Image (cartoon, rainbow, N blue to C red; front, side, top):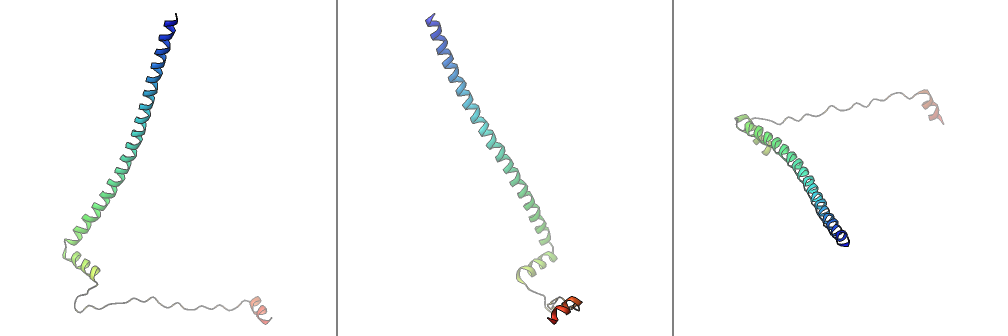
Length: 112
């Protein structure tokens, strides 16, 4: 009878150790899965950013493949003009000072 209880105690102890080992293994897998999901989302965002950059660069290459695009790039980068071209400076119109006549109570207060 006592040997039977001792075997059951050992069996329960071994089962508890196995359960603990399984629980820690599952916890580690959950953590790794969380890291994998977050890295996958980050990789998706980086991919989208790179695709947008690729589209921009392809548009720039298409523009630079024409003579007009090359001319515009040179003008923008170096601030040059063709012979005979002049600089036009657009000046905003002067703001007109609008003065409104003082109200009757402002006139009264100015007397004092």
